[in-house]
Image (cartoon, rainbow, N blue to C red):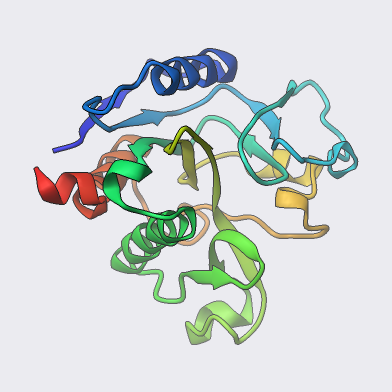
Length: 221
């Protein structure tokens, strides 16, 4: 079974990022995969090719350049981040398959929590839920979608790190200071706003359990 561990909270982003890089660089053929659960101190992160113009007003929140894929996102209290340190080459997975797996796990979790319209959005990695009139129909194509989970990964020597951030019960106003994931006017939401009462601890542990059970490494053990 893939090891799952919580890091001390709130976790400074630079320290966790460095630890992920160190773990990945030091991996050997038999190094086990791990899932790290994190609740970060407030921070904006720009992906490797992220454009600074997508930061509209950072205020007092620090901005850091990261080496993950994607544009700009916000991490902060009330959001759980599952960092998946996975040897894709050993698992026989391509990056596209891996990204789809991460999204599928989150979509299934959200649907089991009662968000039947949880879905992907073409051309925009991550997971979304219907809001406004669309929320009442439960149909993903019935209206506006709000982002509830952001995804970004980095692959080094066939091994992936970074992962997926799921908004649980947080102050959503910092998302107004950016074009989330590079999309102007993209609405963001969290589980609390969608009527789901759950803690970061509860959601993180269930998310990690499902990820661990879905990854090929876990199935072979």
